[in-house]
Image (cartoon, rainbow, N blue to C red):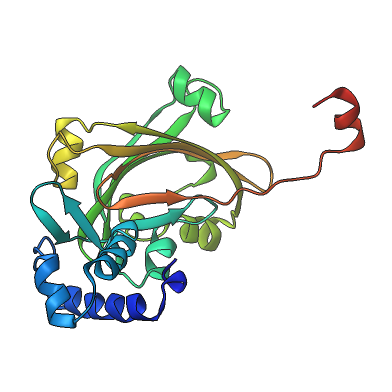
Length: 247
């Protein structure tokens, strides 16, 4: 977006970025009047450059208070990519802490999601996913035990997808996901180190392998102050048959 800025505003943007780099997260920027005088620029030009950085979530305006630096959200693409790979692509270090790990029998709801008979053995575990040691996601995963024999909690310090491919020869090829806003319960908020008043994003999804088996059901809670989701939409040309039906 900043490519649309004219020369002077682009110069001010660069100065603002340099200033932000010297400030801690949550620090207040000097008043606009002071910055405009310091950099010999019209306040309207300064404000436009600030607006761009607010849109990019590098700054946040607080009504009646001022403009503050903020931690940019991690923008995750909705697609077949695991948390660990996604975080590494963004130049951060992924990590995991195992919170719960259980072997149990599938009750009706789990069996329906995983497309297995009621009573079949399943593995259910909950992990706290980290980026540069900061808590980002509480991720609850359920797998049919028959597909991952010998799986133990100590095997799950890294990427589940990498483990499925390397140890079990399983490649996940498609998935369905549903996003919804939510408020965390006390336990989840404690794990994420946020108050229960902090809005979060819940993601519920199932993943399929090349044999069209459901390999996992995941229910994850992402910190709303640290995460944003991005997807790509493309138009397709309706088929003649679809046009004939009026679709």
